[in-house]
Image (cartoon, rainbow over all chains, first blue to last red; front, top):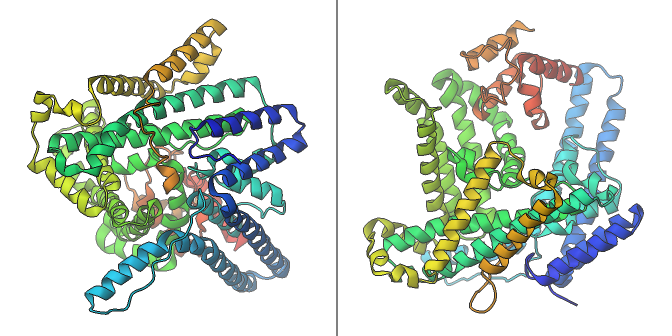
Length: 532
Length: 77
């Protein structure tokens, strides 16, 4: 049995090609089975027998969805023809029943995720507390094998159940369609986190493979390969050295590697998304976008609307609004608005909800204090931005500064980028302590000596490496500007005559072959988001 | 258009012409915080429950759309 480590391995690309070939040759009824089988082979080749977890989650989601539907149907039958007050009272009874089912569903699905991913972290911290309290009692720290993609497919499962509970979608009786929705192999390891209404029907329909989809999908896969092999893997030469032993480097190199890591993370994750979305497009499946040129964001809030979009919208729909719209929060908002006004009144409920979102966001990325710090850092920045907004508006008005002007937006973009880089420094650091040390060093030990002496070029990356990264960054920047202006580059290329099309493809392939960081002397970057 | 709805909207965001604007969410006249206030006020004023599933741009982009949602939810409740 072959095993897959990343999407960018020969085995994964081979599986994709064989699946695409079978998909193209077989009739519709069998195509969906090809996708499901390929998905389970993909999962098994990474996580082996842990496939049982995915199968259990799929069966559980199917069953609970139908259970909710039964209660909803019973409620509809019982309340039919009743007067409004009676209907309201009976609705409340059934609503309570459904809430209990959802509580049970969350206990099963979130509980399993917490058990596998967070028990060691919580146990370690409880042991530290016990030690501080002078107790000799120690909890055993369990070690679990974690199935690949559990953080992603669990969120899809919970979203599906909440959508059924909210009557946004009907419960699906078709187990095969649900199984495909939960396991579709291109998105299994790193998302995007899809909603049932986004992909389930299209996956089950298994549309015929079309030439234009195949071309556009392949283009996107190539672009993803470029980001991953040329940028992310090359930057790894510097990043892994500096973050492993930050004490050896001055503040300038640490600042540079913080910026480098932010760019690496973007290239790795968005490059993987290009591959995933491109692969799905080859089968005629449209997956939701996960990135929208995040480095053009003027504020941190905007950044999170452009970076890992499907995770952000998941938290907004299933945590932010449910918390801020809960009865106690609504009451608080109404009262606070009378006393504190239109801006600061609802901000209290907003802050509580934001806190819940960001603690979950931090923990979702990993069981570690640096991830919690990362979440709290972004919580503080977004809340701080909201608190300061009326003051900033007043100041800029007094100073006659046009907030919509190009220079003002450039300053905002630069500020947001710097803040994001600091956040990512803590995110990547080997623990919170190391992150704090690195952060301090940027300010206490900042010198250009390493640049002048040339020692900067001996930290893992030499002059050529830097040139390749800078050229690639300029390329991405130009592409980003064109996309911001609404120009659809891939469609424009696909419309050119065949000679121009292939000239572009060959240029991109050659660029990857020549400048890609692979082979002897290079350590490919592990898929960062697959670890979450 | 219901006068009570317009009053609530003008109270929350006085600088917007709610009778004509049809891009309240798309053009960021109403942000997440305004929506939190708005939902609380609408529920109290019209004795309805606005479930989270209804909090989508389409339902809040204009006063007219909001009124349609309120009427629908009053009938469903």
